[in-house]
Image (cartoon, rainbow, N blue to C red; front, side, top):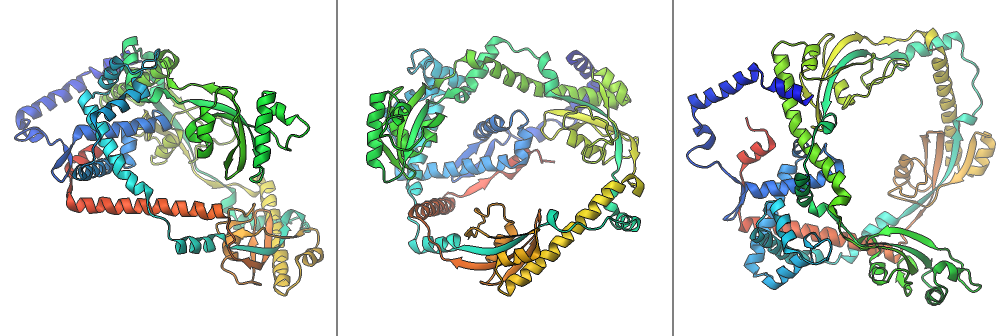
Length: 634
């Protein structure tokens, strides 16, 4: 396939295009491109400090790599740009520069010895065998990331200066007690309602519909029984996955790719535990259990003893220090393998831990991730080959080739589909072949007339191309009653049951409003009615336990004794607000809210500080450069 593509790229049309390009340079010169000097390379200026284009590219690429780790190769530069990563990257660089200037003005600095110590501690610079700092590895990693030693050290120093400044804001301000209490009162107020549920499937069955009933329902609900428009398509596609098997990457290149991604292959220390959690007032029992477990060799054995507490062993699978409750992390990760901790108190109670597995962290060896690195390298090269493909296919089509001829010229196959709807679903029992970016292909097909074909379109994920041709259009049509009689009868019955449920629920609402008890109402209305009471509902509905969300919002707008009626998935529901209770939040809920408010106030304070810094150090964004980076110039 690649040979076919590359052969087409060298065709006469491409040569003519290059000739025209060269001629344009001869006629117009290159002054319009370069001006009187080198091209503008500054994305923004902060005070007197310029943020150069290479700094933007480095930060943008770092963010793009992180996005690709989460979304895979479909996270292309174009996709990231579309979602605002260009502007976000510039904003970050401007904020960092503002903080660097402020830190320098305050005289915040770290000695060279401290910087050197931090460099030596970083896992990516440590030898895989000795676990010690390797200067050779340090220089190779920097080279793979196109950084000099001084650039890296300067960058690390600036990062640490900013971190020192940030700590003052991260400490934040205490949340005002009146604000905490007001929010607690609002969020923790609870309301309970008496309810009567009506199950539509238990109401009295309606009589069988007559022919006239069905004919009228079919006529009045034509939209329910209309076959959609269908289109039969021919599709040509090529994605990076189609090219992977034809790409070879040599060993030296793979190792360079591995070094360039060194930060992705750092494995944290992980441990696995058994734990027993006892109530907050069982500190002495927890100590006794820990002592017994050390004597018996395990928590499981200690719990088999006659005087053991009534508790079970809870396994905690592989976890890192950062993923644990802070109070548990330090004792858990200082124990040896098989070790049993002293009791540790957290908001959940008293914990006793037993280490059941230890996995030391470090750099994952190249051999362990060779296949992953190879896949990533191949995908990167596949994206380059897609560009060659697009040129080859455009060349063939521009030369007058039909879709069939163009596909044959570049070594691709066409795929024909059965008639499909606008949602891509086939008509009847037909099957649709697997086609990449199928929703996009269908969406494009619905913009074309019968017999028309699209241009060469790039997929939204930027990992392939497609062309779609509409071979035939089958217009929408109402299915005859005799063809859909069973569906019409089922829909008619469902409506009858729903209407009956609403009528019963309305009766229940009237009785609730007059003061009757839910149980008496349910007994009077028959087996379709079920009496009950809601839990003590919170305003946010987090504990509504399957009740309709709109019921919660209604209850918090009602006065005690008021009623409401709601249709539900199962039928209908009548409710009467019975009690309103003031907030009674536990201390940990208040603490959690206060912490959230403190964090929010810290962020607001930081935003105001950065805004003030912009007054001291004016910020000027190079809009022309931003347009070029976003691909919107011209």
